[in-house]
Length: 163
Image 1 (tube, helix red, strand yellow):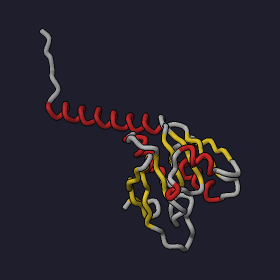
Image 2: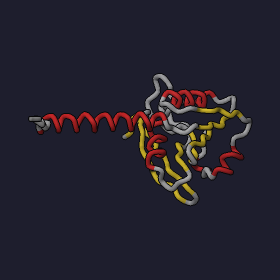
Image 3: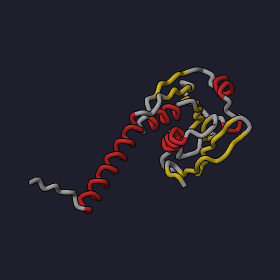
Image 4: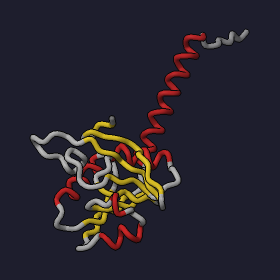
């Protein structure tokens, strides 16, 4: 005679929770491991651009840096609106990333895949990634999502913290 034992409801719920946690962890690990390569075009004389590259690399992005004496023609070709221009331009996953955009916002862009040209942080706000200045108060700044003829706020940050 064979006795079949079925798991208790407690064991079933615990097992299901463990499976869900494992799936979530493997999904986030997969997402982190599947970030597309980023190409950053910058002026070799700009120090804050190098600091921003360090920021996105620390966030898990693989970055190729291209140094050119004039980045303006690339910005025009990629459709960066003049009011959103900053000091460096990145290309990743079919999007343009202009200026000191936090890595967190880039990851959100890549996860959500909106129909847009890209993201931009206009100018060089104090406290944005690459623009940290000791002793200076942090600026609150907007990450704009843009495409031809359209610009909207994608996120607001104060330093690296979304507000």
